[in-house]
Image (cartoon, rainbow, N blue to C red; front, side, top):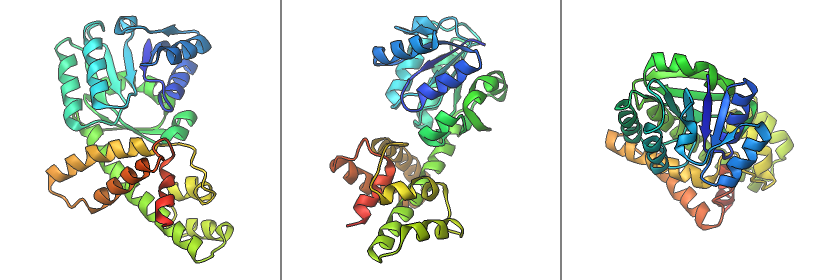
Length: 283
């Protein structure tokens, strides 16, 4: 299959490299043209300057920031992709945006899968992302080899929008875990506990989790190199909050995380990893 990738940030660029490693990458595109040119030169593929440069692709992968970005790209691709092509969107957007994107493409007999990911920049670099997919199961099977290049797990969650709904649940859990881990480790510091003893002890018991394992040591050293940026977490939480509010569930965890990440961004931590939350918890 011929594949294109649009959106070459911390997630999209390593995804493109994995697809290239499987011999399927044809074109790459990015809002900042220089980034697309550089990666295209590195991988010896086409640097797209418009949607038309993806016209020969069987699958186009999106990994962009905002709902508006997804709809803008889908609208342009709808005019140039051949019938039967499939757009796979790895962005985190609303369920409604996923359904709108699918409808825009369906008019032209082009498929759409909403397929948000979990695993952060490390997962993208290591090809170990968890991908939660909404849309037609047969379309997923057609692109499985492509997205499998950077996935540890691919799960079909249901009809269009089910992938984004699953990501919303994922982000509530992530936000809550981040809150607890950062607050707990800040308390450990205040109580004078030795981090070299504390972290492995916590990891060996019921408190063990991915965030504590991957970020515990670095956050205690106040090192916040981004795996997942605070500003991106805030964007996701705003989407999730609307979905949760409409569903009628209590949103205590979401609201606390919203307030905390908004404050972090005000303090200048927008580009920092979400583990910078410990800076607030320290008081």
